[in-house]
Amino acid sequence: MPKRSAGAARHEGSGDPVPCRVVVCRDCCCGSVKVAGDHRAQVARLRAAAPVRISECLDVCDQANVVVVQPSAAGRAAGARPVWLGLVNDHDATEDIAAWVSAGGPGVAPCPDILELYVFTPPRRVRVTQA
Image (cartoon, rainbow, N blue to C red; front, side, top):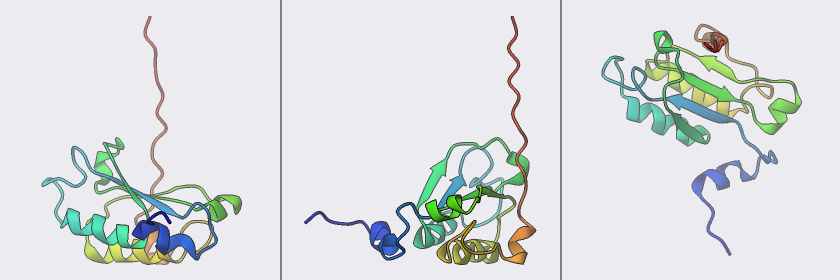
């Protein structure tokens, strides 16, 4: 029998084939000495709640630290889209995100009111091709 990872076991009973996931920006500003906080502890705490992917710069450095909560398959089926959270620089905000994703995240569990303070819409990128 193949060995299952801790993440697979954690989400196995949910019945959701694609769980809520978290993307954490860690590049030029996010996760650096430019932003105060225990960045390793933040990632570890989020990993305890959901699968986490570490990203290179998400190009919204003015919002460092940036965390994107991606909906599960059930959340997507309910019409949810990824939720971008900025200025996630303290333990309490990380705990609120972990609790939300553990409850199902976007489309499954309502976003806690306190997290609405961190939600932002990233700018659309327009590529201009010069001849």
